[in-house]
Image (cartoon, rainbow, N blue to C red; front, side, top):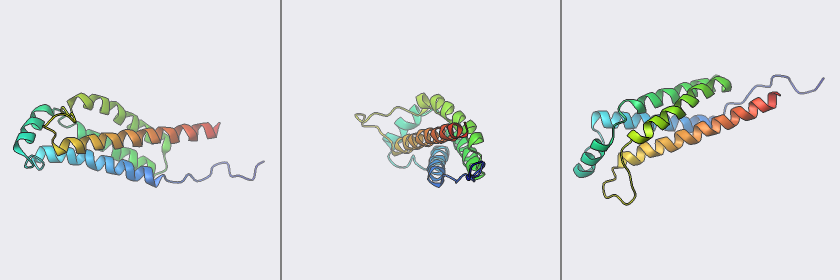
Length: 143
């Protein structure tokens, strides 16, 4: 007999949703930029090096889809279901890492698109880990 409701309305984590949305947009932008050649015009030497080292193909588009599904689950306050596509996104990120092209701060051939994609991956990992922490807290609060 507690005064607190047994099922309080969960608040939407808007900052997490925005973080995941930005990661999804950067992932989709990477795929579109490479597919349409929009980012190739930057510098021909860097573009040649980057295009030959990047072999992720459609993986950024798949990642953007998984992140979008995670966002939809969060918007409908389904934290438990949101962890499933987020976990799949984390697995896909490990598949994508060796295919993202070579990058080194000492290399003279760093294309700006590589930095965009690495930023998208960092936001993806940060957002998914944040989501897993929220899910863990929610599960421990129920018990």
